Image 1 (cartoon, rainbow, N blue to C red):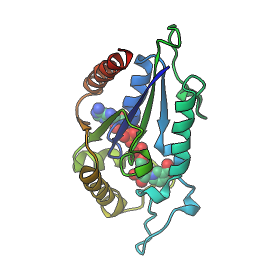
Image 2 (cartoon, protein in one colour; image 1 turned 180 degrees about the vertical axis):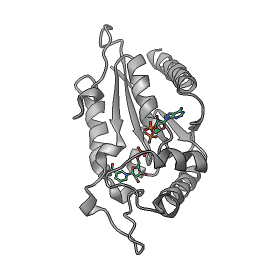
Image 3 (cartoon, helix red, strand yellow; image 1 turned 60 degrees about the horizontal axis):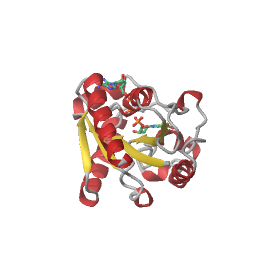
Amino acid sequence: MKVLVVGLGGVTNGGKTTLAKRLRKRLPNCSILSQDDFFKPESEVEIDERGFKQYDVLDALYMDEMVTSIHTWLKNPTGFSVSTAEMKSTHSNLKSTEEVHILIVEGFLLYNYEPLNEVWDRRYFLTIPYEECKRRRSTRVYQPADPPGYFDGHVWPMYLKHKREMEENTNNIVYLDGTKSEEDLLSYLYNDILREQEVLKK
Ligand SMILES: Nc1ncnc2c1ncn2[C@@H]1O[C@H](COP(=O)(O)OP(=O)(O)O)[C@@H](O)[C@H]1O
Ligand SMILES: O=C(O)c1ccc[n+]([C@@H]2O[C@H](COP(=O)([O-])O)[C@@H](O)[C@H]2O)c1
């Protein structure tokens, strides 16, 4: 059985979850793993001197558990399902030996964690400009909600820092313009992944 692990990384509110869910609807044998499901509980997240909870760093996440989940999927792509019912994979009628199983891992901090470096067959990264990101983020309610000044004081600076580190250490990143329409992004990614799948089948 052949497998394809697709990283769909990028800035907060860049459209990662939206795109991953739409892709899964179109691609047979496709599962999603969301990095957001690995956030530590609030009580375990560090607080800086300004009182900002340090959510936008690797330490805020159970990254070891995320790696384990990916390896569990790799061992048994057909049996994989995560807690949320809607995250279950789609299935095709093809015989399993001909199938290529796809795991889309979506999250804001995928390419800064060394143990995952070998896992990706494809690395995508969604970007949107500062103003658009701030606008989209202001309409979203996290638990806990962003306190005043959080975007400019923590979220955006951490994004820039991690993006810089990623660019220094990682090759083969395919950047996606998150201001494009959902349809455009979906069609680009769908065709790109299908091409990868065809290469694997040969
Ligand atoms: N291509 C797009 N163009 C405009 N808005 C979008 C697009 N994709 C997603 N959004 C909107 O941006 C917000 C964040 O989307 P989401 O998929 O949750 O982002 P992420 O998972 O990257 O945080 C949502 O309100 C969503 O409807
Ligand atoms: O999910 C949580 O527990 C959680 C709690 C507080 C904040 N977050 C935010 O989740 C963001 C990453 O998720 P996303 O979907 O916006 O890419 C990151 O910017 C965090 O600040 C997430």
